[in-house]
Image (cartoon, rainbow, N blue to C red; front, side, top):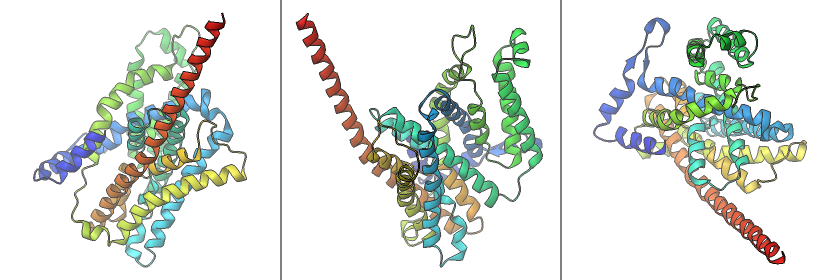
Length: 399
């Protein structure tokens, strides 16, 4: 994913940038279904839905069997996500109060790019507690849902409710089939392979969500959250784990690298205007400072005013590093940028450059904090192992 993003930035800003733009903007698909999309749109709307399915599926497992079963702990990342959207929007608005034409970009710094954030955490946080990844996943999903609602309400001309209702109906069917009873039991008795039912159903749900005007990746999240996470009699693994084992290699090996290659190619037109343009400054400060203040401050205040609690395996410095990581805002932020300034190409390019710069700054800051914390947890694990080994040796000597 990271290599794909770096390659896209280099390619887009090289003499061969025209070829990159031509490939990314190449359009194909059935126009009768409004699916004549560019290669970039297919990557960010269709391919990325597979990754979001895995994320939604993983969250469902956490809500049913894992960390998020405890409402007092589940509340914390949800409130943190809301605060992490509100504070960046307020910072951007405050910086651009004297510039009405730039105010439309208030939604740009709200979104965390879950794909990049999770990828960076995987690279730098090998020894960090698993609870931190769960916190980030929950926060980023709520963040993405909030950003999608913002796009639908404030940046979309209209939402088509008929396709949306159709998608909801098919999602209900998807959830019913997961129960393994009634119609699902008859399908199992027919010995039809599961993919012959679920692949067309998933494709139909995606098409309907896309046609409704809602960002299509929400279809992946919804289906993931509907997966059954408990095994029935005679099943050697749950449908949730089975789907994850099948799709995760494709998501990590194909979906994310292609998405990064097609989405990250922002052309830098000049750094002079970036640091003097209030829209770009609002984006940078919103993502870098706003996310940190909103997520860390919102989480801390929530633990003081409510029964919400931080996982005992985590410390507040871990949450601070994760909040910095949430300042990575690629896909949805770039999308909102295009919707915010359709008639001002210079402001659009400056704001896009601001998203890239803010994401790089957030990555560096988060890496400094979380890599240090990962090393701390590694030393702690080593000391624990040495202590356990010493106790075993003493026990054997005593025997």
